[in-house]
Length: 522
Image (cartoon, rainbow, N blue to C red; front, side):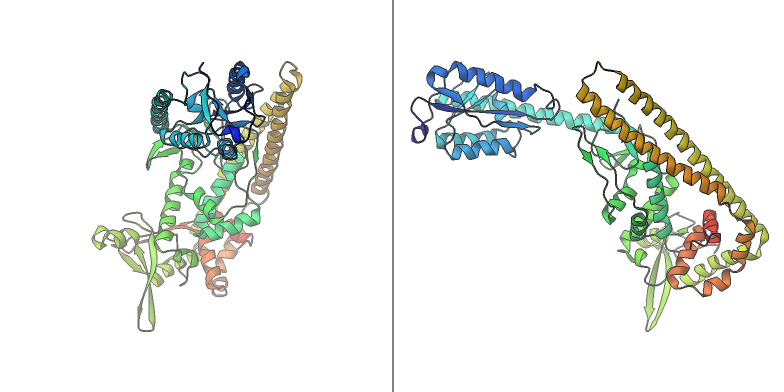
């Protein structure tokens, strides 16, 4: 190994026989840093051995450590490097020793800047595993050649990594990142596994948006229920607590196509390996309403003119939402529902075009009134309501069965860990603590499922209550404020279809809303 000459600027602050050597170490990722002897320790050990071999020249290691674990060499945004440069400017260091050149930098431009600082302060630079000396021109040329290859290698690695991630996404694989509400990351293979409790929250968030037609309405109910965002633990063991939802986080959930079982890469959706949480019809209705809300700049959420069918009315020809709009003639204002496709792409693209708001809203209200006067229609709604309650109960029982199996596996694994004394005690106790936390979470989930199942079994729809409530619809309706009338329609109606050619109006009732109406939750 060549010997580095004494730093030219060191004479001002150090004895002639002493060369103060700072060891700089770096590792690009945090993987393995938690080990007792890691890559940074290995680099430092090699550098200390080299400095010891130069003891006769007056070399000794400064006490300050300059270790950057988990920082890329592609830029200079590294805390230990910045501290090293600051100490160099304070003339507290005479020589910098690294294991390899690319530990200091993988960018030729950044390395030139660092070397400029070294030369200005008279700092020598030594790489333990490479033959060069920066105190002469040949050494500096050799160093620049090495850095050129290091930068080239970094760029090639980056390109390969991007290509690999793209290929993985095209195959529908989860490639990492922050965990998403509704899914857990499989510790065995990095796949996404449905978290039954969180998945239920996600489904209800979509249902709340379809009910209210506004993110503000969803947020209000979420706050009342006390829901929080995803709670998870990093690979390093740091716990990330769940936080209150905001409009932006609710919007992110409603726009996340991952919930439909796909992986999106460069605006193209690929079938994912994970199980879907949201069915396609719910997803498409939600996206249409979100798009409609964006086009009207929040007019749908505010409902300034009392549109009863906001988020419910769809064009029978093209399947797109019909937006509420108004025109004014003098002091008189006229309300319409307009096909979104016709409005955006031209009237010739849809036969429905538009319909007067009062006419279509009146037709829907007449359909609701018929529920109270037509016994056959009321019985059909009641039967569908019972079917939905039955399906809901079956889904809850399935979730309960899954949670029970999970709890059983967690308890078995906890017992195995408690009995296994061959594993390192620190790591074992850490895993046991994490497992106990999962057990408590699963038990809490089972308690919630049990309450929901009891609610389905103990609160069925009473046919006589439904008939009486619907029969009294007219007297109830006229006593409601505009906002309350809209809520009532949203509670009873799931979707309204309008055919502009035939004038036919199709009303699909939300039969679970009939149950809520009978129980007085409006």
